[in-house]
Length: 192
Image (cartoon, rainbow, N blue to C red):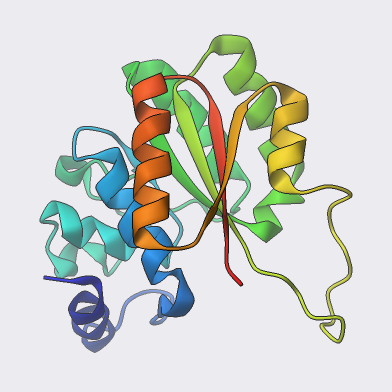
């Protein structure tokens, strides 16, 4: 089942809190899940967890984001997006395997992300933070939240970084390279 089919099937099952379509994030989700492989844990948000279908996870397992999908190595969704980063570091330390963590720009403004970046570097946790950025138009009600790009902030903490286009191919290649390196990495997927 591909992501588009899975989204339609999940929406018909009335997921909690409500259907969250991927839209322009589809390439990032597909690239993240295919780049990390099936042996590594994924810490995703409510939208990104649909990517577990690419690992053979039945759509029915994705209705409740708090339940997780253990056989498919999909962690339950945290109620605070920035905390996903801390959970991913813990999983990486506990398993000694690369862990993929999906994040958005709002997570980058969270203190929890900075704690996770610092902890990942101090411990050498093989965690991959896949942070998607979307330029916010000037007329948006949200003001500027970061003084630098997420990749620049991660580099200041000492992480390996990469900036890629938000295509499935570019993201998969960057995630695969980060997993092979086995060091804390932040990949900034830029949606234009």
